[in-house]
Image (tube, rainbow, N blue to C red; front, side, top):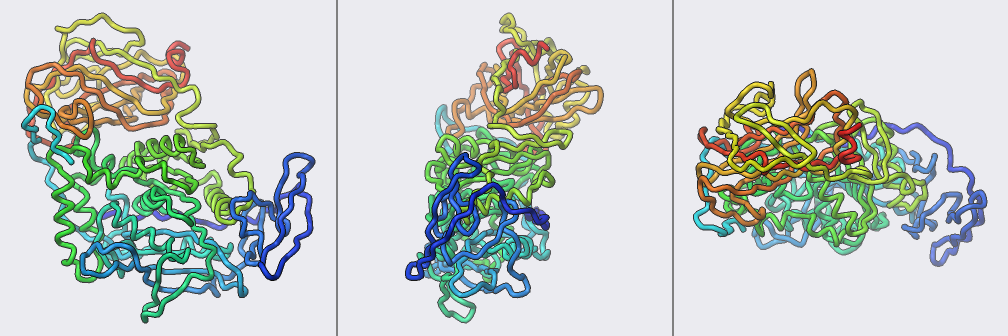
Length: 637
């Protein structure tokens, strides 16, 4: 349960020259309104550009063009002009709309404000990070996963109705200086806050629902005059130094809360940079009806998460809240329910007003890749201004490729309204397996085509994947005997050898590269000798060296038609089970083979019931669909 928080590292940026090629013009300040007139001129005879004091503007933040702004630029980015030694630091408590600990008083959240010492009348935007981890994390027990699965009792009866992302080890102090040290000198306020039920804040942790969201949103409301804040001695404090324009960021849970608050549509939140962030807590702790662990944290669930961050004084007042989380999360069926809908930000993407720079590691098995992919897709469907960074790391922020400068430009563009060209760049930055970076217009990659591969096999020998449909052989079945104590890395090895605990199918050696970009999907015809089981698929890159698990996918076979409704299964009856795997962007090299390995329980992720469940697969009625750039042509190079 102990985890380390990975804060966004913001190193110093080299001084760059001012944007060139923009014709200057005269600023006419009007003292009564403290506003400057903005005019437009042509840049090199091409498009029209707004300017204010030589600063090109994009029109998103009109108040930048006023005497209340004091910034300087280098190459389209704010540069350090304020001293950190003179920074104003305040410890405050913001009153929220919620009473999550049910003491009859509104919760207050603890915040630390860092802001530059400016001349009178100067106002600054704010970069804001809320965290449940600032006061450490507790070592709490999690669920035993070596238990039998529970079958539902009636056909069609829905009984239902997100790891902890990295945190700090107990007693380890948070680094409160990285954002402040970088952005305060550049003319930003920085706010670091403690989520409800943690540290000096009131309330109880609720693992991502409305109570936690409103506790986070309250700080934005205060910056815009809609909520109250108080000093440690009880004096009401206003945010008259702020423009009210806010950008949120953070990694893991700290990045999840920006997604959550953006999905409320709160006024004043102009942009977010969620890194390795959750977009739906159901997909953090469940998958297609199956109870699934965050990578490396078997047995964790929403109640354990809340207990681990419950670092406030008098934590016993949250006993009933934690108990309610435990009861409602429903580890018996794993079904999507109202409990999970309250923690699902994807369904509210239509409310998002802020721009979003989505950042995720393609090898993140803690906050898995479905979290970024479904959020990215939903933002696109709702025309939210967006950009995507995909790197080869795991549960972390990216390094290299001018990442600090990109963040700097992004915040400048949306919080100061500086036209620095960042939204004219291609939408996607992606890092390949050799650690090189490229830019692309969209994701999944342009040209990715759903490509179906058909399964054939005999006995427990190595089977094949075929581009063309294969003759139906309904009586030719293959079997898997579940052994939950065998790990996936063991089960994928030596696919040519007979194994009773897995079935493996591979393509011929590729004659050229094949790029996967998007979400693999399976349709498997099978019967199970008991009313409940786990079913797991592993997408594998086979070569002359060790095999690599590219993607995983899990399903509770009882969720035959949807994640929100379990149905009882008749042992021995054939069903068609369909489910998705984790989205990926991966290049299979020439000479490699693409493999799909079917197993039952997945030691590191699923419940681990008693061994012996028998699953019978009909390969000729089963298939996997891969989003391959170039489609079938990628296999015929």
